[in-house]
Length: 83
Image (tube, rainbow, N blue to C red; front, side, top):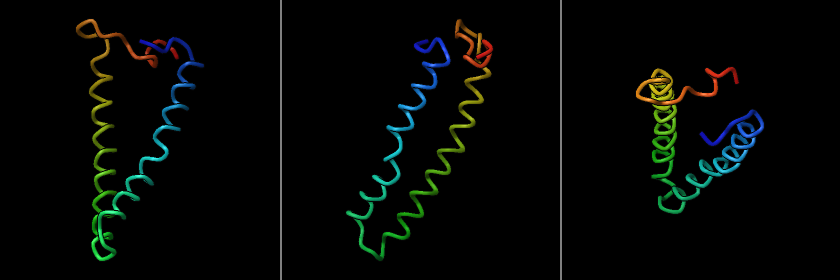
């Protein structure tokens, strides 16, 4: 694992947040360049529905990954080490 302390975790989290911050506005901009005003409302709704479904799925995947901690040689997450 690349992160060994709280400072590294917070720095990585900050950088990840900064990199992800333009994803939704950028996606909406791309949609607005490809579709007409008449089509844009439906495409924007589908974009946000997809975003919500992806958010729901990532929670389920994270639950499954946390249940794997310690199996088949996988290390426990930082949460289990008292981080």
